[in-house]
Length: 292
Image 1 (cartoon, one colour):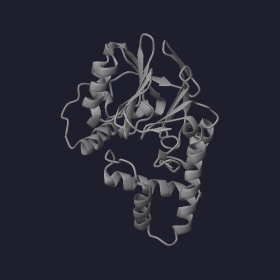
Image 2: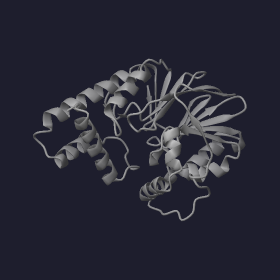
Image 3: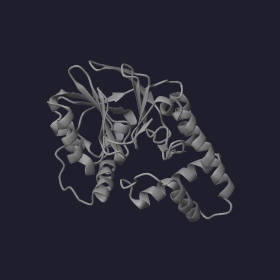
């Protein structure tokens, strides 16, 4: 099943934010955890949802950030002050980006574009918020259970996935690509294609009951079981399509065609120029790595 709406998925698991930009909430006996860092645009929505699901926000103790792209960390600076006992976790490369003034400025600028509102001052500064740096294959023990850190580069150099053993939920963020219909996926290999494929194969060895995506909700049952297979199939179909057309169309025409064919879901969180540039990067990576 593909659950692409906010709300309670299981007694201990809920989708917050919006379907296109979810923030996930996991409930334990005496504390909570969040996965994904959301958008500045959605801060008020997420805070309202948190107050609905959590009686005392000080019980939110853990917040896992999967990577440092603007649409996965844009809410941190605004929500962090509400969570007095929270500890944030991210990969070393992600934390390096969060400590970079120019990078953080870009995160804010892109969030402002889609929010259509400039925020002059944030209640906290991403450059100063403390993070625990997580390592590949590292178990993070919490009272909610054990979280296994899985480095899954390819979409970005700093991408991590998370496996919550007790609930058998795998949080993959964008590491499988973007699911755009029941069986079709778009490859989001914006950093390195070979590593993107390796990461999908790595994730395919797990057998979760639920896969939580970076965009467009969660997968359960046979959809979760077949996610990696369908993701790789989507990649293969995309490579064949581009290989057949690369000498017939200009770069601009290729980007137009890809946008028309694959931009099916809600992309209100991506400025058009950023989306088109991302496609150009993907095509460049495929060519540079000799996949097309």
